[in-house]
Length: 188
Figure 1: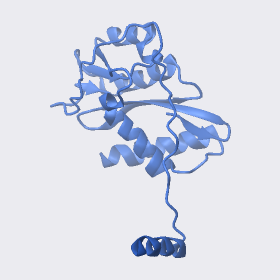
Figure 2 (figure 1 turned 135 degrees about the vertical axis):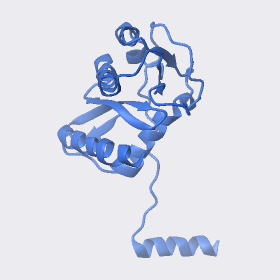
Figure 3 (figure 1 turned 90 degrees about the vertical axis):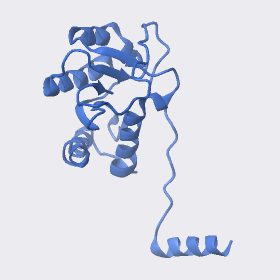
């Protein structure tokens, strides 16, 4: 008990405070009528080559921002991303199209996502068919099936954003772009 008291005193003397984890907020709507793809990835997060498997919200004073990302599981780099005021099918489609345009993967790539309505939508699934990519979706309520993406968001929120409240959406977008392009992809 004496060690705990001395740690508390030392932290107070140094002006240090314990950072608590923020309350979990559900952003995925998996209560929809769209068909759900089989979990082909099945937690195999270590493909043997790039472009074989790819696999949320940010507060500002102007309101929420939503970030959609596409990660190449081989390199763990972000190959596609998009930010918008709403979590929509067009948001995730823009991230996916950015990834396709950047990497131009061959036929057969497995694209893994959660079961959110924007990923399961006919429009998004049609885009995957158009690019000849194989959809895979996490099991219901199982965040471990998409852990590389969950880990990225945890790192972004804890290590980069922290307790920061952006004054505007444009400030948040510029800062997140810096994290993605300058920090995250260069460290991976």
